[in-house]
Length: 438
Image: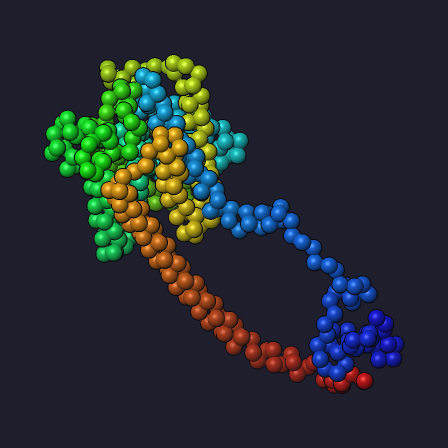
C-alpha cells in the first residue's frame, strides 16, 4: 500500500482510498486498521475458557450470588435438622442462639472494617422499624426451625414462600400498594397448597393409624408418608414415629413463621434505603440472640446445654458461618442485580432442599405434598412476576415523561437561541467545496 503524492490517495491492488476511508470511485473502503498501517489482517484468536467465564460472570453476577446464597440457606437448614435430631438433639432455641450469636459477631466485624454508615444502630428515624424487623424475623426463623423437627426440609422450605404473598397483602393496607384480584386469587391457591401439605384429614383415622400413616408404615393402598426419615426422630431425638398431631403442630409453627417473615418483609419495605442491609440483618440476629438467651434461662423445660461431642460443635460453627454467608451473598446479589432474574432465584432453594432430602435422608415427598408445594411455589412466582412487570411499566412511564420534559426543554432552548445562532452563521466565511481531483 502506497500514497500517491499528487492525488493524496492511498493505493493498493484492490482499491484507491482517500484519508476518510472512501474509494476514489465513490465506493466505501474495506481495509481495516491493521491494513491502513501496512500490516496484514490479524488472525482471530480463539476465546479461552477463562475469558468466557469472566464474561458470563460479569453478565450474571447478581443472579449467581443469589443462587449460591440459597444453596447455603439449604445447607443451614440441613445442619439445623441434624442438630435437632442427632442423638439427644438440641432445642430449636439453642440452635437459634448459636447461629445468631455467630452472625452478630461476623456482621459487626464486617461493618466495622467496612466503615458502614450509622453502624451499629442505624439512623434514629428508622430504629423503631429495625426493632420490628428484628421481632418479626425472630418469629419467622423460630417457626422454620421448629417445623424442621417434624417436617422434611422441602416441605418446611416451600411453606416459607407464603410470606411474600402475605407481605403484599399487608403492604396494600399499610403502604397503600396495589394488591390486585389476581394476586388475591394466588394467595387463596397457596393456602390450598398448605392444606394439601398439612393433610389434616389424617387425624380422623385415629391415633394409632395416624401415627402409622405419618411415619409411612401404613399398609393401605396409598402410602401416607410425611417424607421424614424412617422411624422418624421426634422432639429432642426421641425415636418415635411422627404422628399427625406433631405434623400439624409443625405446620402451625411454620404458619407462625410465615406471619413473622411477612412482618419482617413489610418493615424492610418501609425502611427502604434508609438503613444499610447488614444493619437490618444485625438487628435481626441481635434480637434473636437476646430472645433465645432469655428463653433458655427462664423456661424450666429448656435448659442451656453445650454440644456433647465434636460433631455438634462443628455443626454449630458451620451453621453460624452458613447463615452469615447466605445473608451476605443474598444482600450482595440483590444489590448488584435489581431485575426479577435475581429475585426469582430465591425459589431455587426448593431444588436444593429436595436434593438434600433425597441425598441425606433418602426420602422423596408423596404426590399430595408435591401438588401442594407446586401450588405454593407457582403462586409465589406469579405474584413476584406480576410485581416486577408492574414496576417495569411504572419505570417506563416515568422515563417517557422525563424524555418528554427533556424534549420540551430542548425545544424551548433551541427556539430561544435560534436567532442568535442565525446571526453568528451569517458572519462565517463561505467555504467553497470542490470535488477531489481524480
